[in-house]
Length: 220
Ligand code: HEC
Ligand code: HEC
Image (cartoon, rainbow, N blue to C red; front, side, top):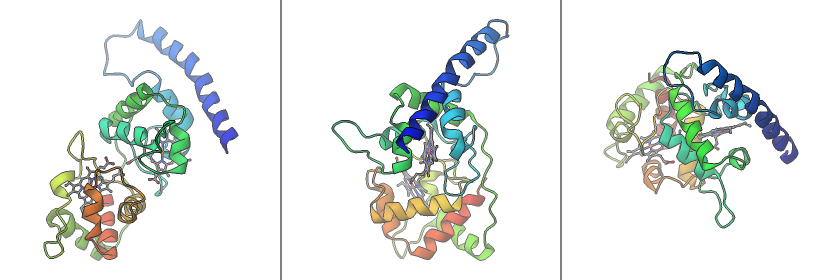
């Protein structure tokens, strides 16, 4: 696994150099255009990350999060949190992602955040149960006053696009990924949220978590 990862990294690095050179050559003739993807990020995304998140971050595998259109600061923070240092363990625990970020510099992580933020979201297309969606919608926008669950909308926005730089967008995310995260916050296996999300989910029932995850996947 480790050797495979190193080979993938090497392949990505080998590809990055010639591609970067071509881009510069093309740019010298081109008129000023829309902001280009940060140099290097696109190559890393296409070479190392695409297998699970697709080249533009629109993962079609429900377990792997959609990154396209997510806030740059949030993505950079997550990448940094996945990375263990010599003195400290990773703040966000994921064996898969920890090995993916091991070779990334802080600058790479910043550029990857900018790259994915610039991509257009293709939201989750997985169908969900109507009744479940209705329950999820009520909870997302109004919370559950009886049990002290705050409205998700108060931090993630009425349309789910989040509030930069701290509150990530959630709209259109795969329900399976969202539900997994809510459960990880609940067990404390994900704890890189300054105890904000952990407190929110501790008051939710299993049914509410499923319902709100389904509803979020349909938000546009
Ligand atoms: C082998 C599959 C795989 C590869 C390759 C991969 N990822 Fe991931 N990624 C995942 C999974 C699975 C998660 C969810 C982790 C969890 O919470 O348990 C994830 C989570 C993330 C997150 C957190 C998103 C969020 O909404 O919190 C970011 C950011 C991310 N990956 C970026 C990348 C980047 C950048 C690369 C390439 C350097 C990459 N990933 C390569 C599978 C992968
Ligand atoms: C008081 C503010 C607040 C409220 C209310 C809140 N959240 Fe969050 N949420 C956050 C913050 C902050 C993070 C980012 C944590 C981090 O930096 O990793 C987050 C992260 C998340 C994530 C992880 C996103 C990803 O891509 O991995 C999900 C899913 C989520 N929230 C869902 C919800 C749901 C569902 C509700 C309502 C039941 C809710 N949140 C209510 C602040 C809030």
